[in-house]
Amino acid sequence: MAANWSSRTVRWVLFVILTIAMGVSLTWGTVLWKRHKTSEFDRRCRESRAQSNWHDLAVVSEQWTQWQPASGDAWVMRALAADESGDLIATADFLERVPVDYQGAVPAFLELSALYFDPLRRPIDGVRTCERILSINPEIVAAHERLCHYFAMTLQRDRLLKQVRESIRLRAETVDAYSYFLTLPDLIFSDALPSVNSWLEVTPDEPTLVIASALIRTRDESLKSGNEYEAAMTAELKTLHDRFPENLEVLTTLLEIISRDGDLEQVEELLEQAPANAREDYRMWRFRSWHHSVTGNEDEAEKAARESIRLNPMDWHSWQHLSGILRQQDQPEAAAEAQATAMFGKDLQGVILALDDTNPPPRSVLDGILDYAATCGDTFVAEHLSRRLHGTRPDPGRNIPADWAK
Image (cartoon, rainbow, N blue to C red):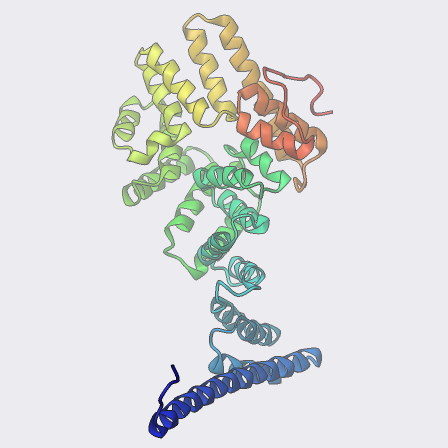
């Protein structure tokens, strides 16, 4: 059956078709114009960059970001111009505006994190930026490495341990990261206090830096000068604990000092007031074990000591503490075995701390870390370090070689 269209209907249909065609043409024309303008901005920026004409690059890239504020290329070019002109604050501000879905976001943010840590001396922003990088791609090795170094520098030992294990889990670790498992309890970088003081000049009220300064001054043997100094540091730590009762670094350092002085009453008070997250901290379990031991509860002392080791198997301090508990329980063989493990870890820690450079550690040291991890029963570390070194898993069981450091 043939269609019976009136001339008016035909004209209407033709009008609709023409309108659609014009709309498509206009849209496509707009797309082409935008592509041309983007290409023109890109060309002009590249020419200015090739000619080291940083003033022109700044002018053109600013126009580009105003016209296309979601362009990662535009913000990177603008940051480059600011960097070459020596305006590092502006450089950081422009890199902050790079969209996370930009194909060059990760290298841009790596550069941004480097600016924040030094020379802008804003490490909290550096940490935030590294975490931003890992939210884009959790396998970026450099971001893990910078976080680990910063946490080690500022004695945030709990965060350091978690960050190292996370990087290993993702197979995004540097091989020298395994050294932290041995050096964690006693590592103080030689430039730690100057670095922290420099950062505090920019952000004087940042809690993590205020705490880091006190912890470094408490632990750095080169700064200690008699009983008056130690008493002053203990008083400062108590003040910090009152301000930041949730901070386990302050709490565990305070417990370490007070338990060493034998002040049972203060240890009891601090343990009773410990925050909920203290249940997952290996150091807190060692102090609970000490308290049980001093008060004559040997069974609970052993349980707490073993829980400390379960949470961090490679802490030689906990093995040494367990050895003392086992001796008190008249278990000489088990005590000797725990003591041998402790001495293995202590000696290995001494070798690592004496190295001029641990990036990377000598192969003999890495083999020692692998053997020590297997000895302590830390299968996570042992299996992953073996993967890095041999591509195989270590044999189970205890293995304390006499020549590991040769």
